[in-house]
Structures are given as structure tokens and as C-alpha cells.
Image 1 (cartoon, rainbow, N blue to C red):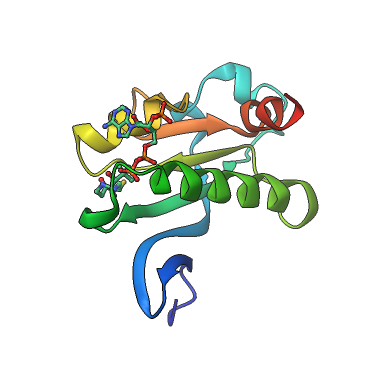
Image 2: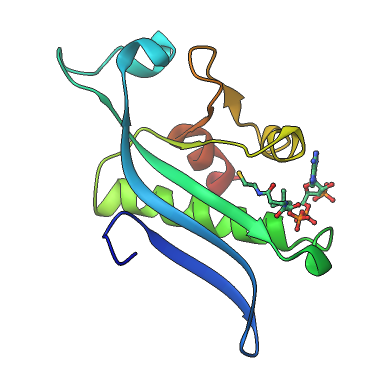
Length: 131
Ligand SMILES: CC(C)(COP(=O)(O)OP(=O)(O)OC[C@H]1O[C@@H](n2cnc3c(N)ncnc32)[C@H](O)[C@@H]1OP(=O)(O)O)[C@@H](O)C(=O)NCCC(=O)NCCS
């Protein structure tokens, strides 16, 4: 945050941080993403996305629904920013290991074959909001 690279959001119990996530403006190259996402992009544009840089829950608080709650908060913020503050087509993240990858895949993130990053289009988030 001191370098203006990201903004960090925390969940706290009193003065103790029990979970957090970060959001950063980011871009992918067109070839990294499916053409269904990029077909309306002007020539020469990169794919604007929001990077969910880190999402982690304190070990003693894992498995209680906090990760899901923070992920939901991150996706709602990213979606709202993309509608009202800064354009973005998707949320992207870099899972730290297989456990984290499966967690994100349970929320419909899909793997980008070119980079092994996980990708969730804003229109998927919008569908959840409308349900
Ligand atoms: C991955 C992590 C964020 C999940 O948070 P959590 O609080 O333990 O998860 P929750 O209790 O909120 O689980 C929410 C849902 O995801 C599911 N889930 C959690 N981990 C999962 C996994 N590895 N694979 C599939 N589903 C998973 C849960 O079963 C639960 O499903 P339900 O809503 O149907 O009951 C947490 O374990 C963590 O911080 N891990 C260490 C750091 C890390 O890996 N961070 C990711 C950095 S990229």
C-alpha cells in the first residue's frame, strides 16, 4: 500500500487481523484470455482486469466461512468498481497452491491455460448479483 501498488482490506477481531485481501488494477494480454471475453476489445488494447492479489485467512479461523465472506466482499467491490469507477472485464488471481486453486474453482474461477492464473468474468459476478 505504501507504494500505491494495492489496497488491502482486512477482517479483524478486536485488534487482531484474522483475514485479508488485496485489490489492484491490472491487465492481461489478449492472447491469454478466451476470445469470447476479448471480441469487443478495440485493436491494440490489453484486457483490463482487477487482480485479487492475496486472500488469506488466519489458520485458526479457516473452515468457518470467512474465506467465502471475504471473497464475496472482494468480488462485490471489484464488480462495483468496474461499473462505477474503473473499467474491468474480470477478476484474476494467482492461487498460492492446489488447495487455494480448488477454493477459487468452487466459485467458478477458470484457469487460463497460457498462465495458470484463475479468471472470473465480471458478467459471472453480475449473474450472481441478479439471482
Ligand atoms: C483458501 C482459504 C482462503 C479458504 O478460506 P476458508 O475460510 O478456510 O474457507 P471457507 O470456510 O470460507 O469455505 C468456503 C467454501 O469454500 C469451500 N472450500 C474451502 N477450501 C476449499 C478447497 N480447497 N477446495 C474446495 N472447496 C473449498 C468450503 O467447503 C466452503 O464451501 P461451502 O460454502 O459449500 O460450505 C483459506 O484456507 C486460506 O487462507 N488458505 C491459506 C492461504 C491461501 O491459500 N490463500 C490463497 C492465496 S491465493
